[in-house]
Length: 141
Image (cartoon, rainbow, N blue to C red; front, side, top):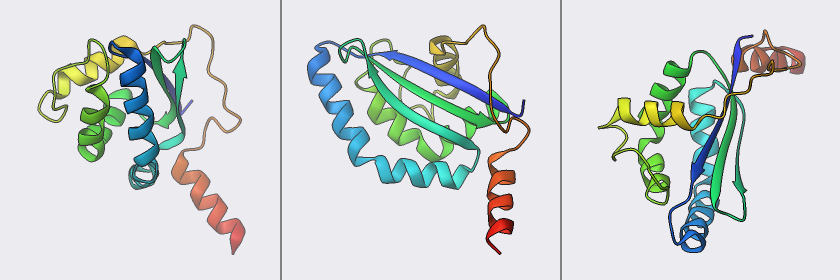
């Protein structure tokens, strides 16, 4: 597979109701910026945030192209400040800002990734985001 799955599950700080509400507001207001960032980097097939266990945890689920290290480095560059805002509400977050503490952030994400033991399925596992966009553009001509 060219694609890789990430399921990063973060524990929300206490008091969880306050921090979960702040995260929901932040993610709602940052939605268009997140879309723009994902389009700019151009390697993410799918991404979503899900609040779990009565808003005590926040999961980031993505499917992306390339290596974990490249994926992380790209997003530290273009979205480091957004991660900083989110991580203020997360228990046991890495030191901030993430652009200054890159290795700690990468290791944190690696640690909270709920890696699946089962195989990863994709209907188009050998196509990158850029391949799909190119095929879509060619079909539209």
